[in-house]
Length: 122
Figure (tube, rainbow, N blue to C red):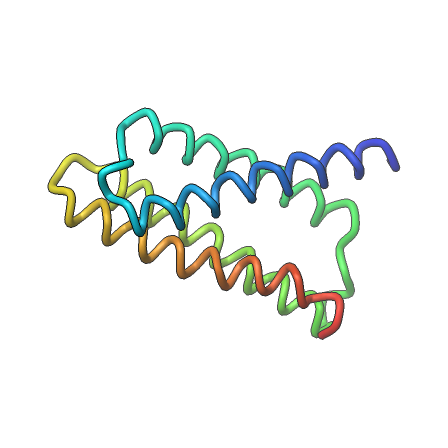
């Protein structure tokens, strides 16, 4: 189980950094947005969410604990960010729509990162 935990954390962190980082960049630089960049971004999102589900099942905090609530908030924001990116950023349409999706997702992912970083101290 220890090896699975290490691998899941590695995938979760690396994919999450890639996803959040690309969201922040594309939110500020719409010219960098391309279908390939968005596909890579959504692939990183899928890996980060899948690894997060595995981590939740391996080291789930007690359901009523403040840490669990903070992590659940972060997870919900991440899933919502992925949905926003699928429907707004990856949708065919104008650049304004893609930028709006990236900015909304970047804000949600900022909340996610803060939640993960602070859940231990909640």
